[in-house]
Amino acid sequence: MDRLAGIQEFVTVVDAGGFSAAAQKLHLSRSAVGKAVARLEERLGVRLCHRTTRAFTLTSDGNAFYAHCVRILAELDMAEGALASDREQPAGRLRISVPVIFGRYCVAPVIADLSRQHTALRFDVSFTDRPVDLIEEGYDLVVRNAVLPDSAVLTARRIARQRMTICAAPSYLAARGTPRAIEDIAGHDSIVYGRDGNTRPWLFPDSKGGTYAAPARTRLILDDLDSAADMAVAGMGLAWLPCWLIRARVHSGSLVRVLPDVDPLVFDTYAVWPRAPFMPARMRVLIDALASRLPGMTGADDEIKSAA
Image (cartoon, rainbow, N blue to C red; front, side, top):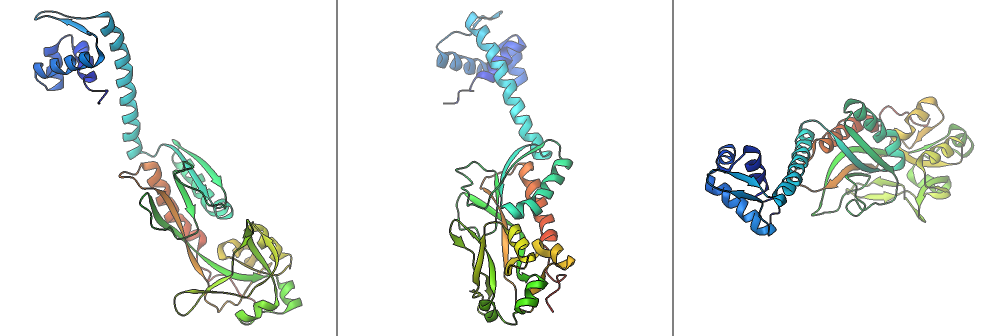
């Protein structure tokens, strides 16, 4: 049942002072307007107005109902106006989940710039490395460093590519030697990312389009990539980290790349959001900004020098 059926006609009749004038405003026949109001009265079980060929007056029920209808239609107009405005000018709240380190260094600056450019946008950002259920937990968008499985309810767009590299402090390499092949890694201490008892293997592309794991000997397991980079700077072992994360440390000389001639693993980062027939401007401007800005932040690794 359409609970709004007849309300617009009823309010227009009252505002216009009669059925004929209302019919002209609504571009309907007088009969159509009269039938719409009659059906509304039948559904409500009350008489809203007294009408004769010359006069139109509201009943007490009609007068009270009219006041409510005016507020309802005004709120509906405001809601539709807000949506129409958002289609043209980004506005409203976006609830987002991003990985901790990638979100802090790469996504947060994009959000800050968008906030400055579009003052009607509001962001609610969660920084977490745990898997999140976008639909169940009510997120508008999540950023994931993984391939999205086929889904009938989600849509994804690649927004960045991240290159991984092995790195170490010059002091560690001076004391323990510099690996010259992947197999040499097994003789070195490694700093490994891990969470909830699971560690991430150091992966490299093979000649068949797949990947293989380097034989790392774990010394430290950390669930924070920034801390892993700091441990590498402290000379605690080799680390396998995103190039963008260690770039400043490499340029300062506190870290150097190891095995630079070995092809790096490159993995994709996606923006994921619920599938819908229409995309609000606030979502579109965020996704476009991420896709435009992040590749320049993650960048290529050709500027990162290697170990001697």
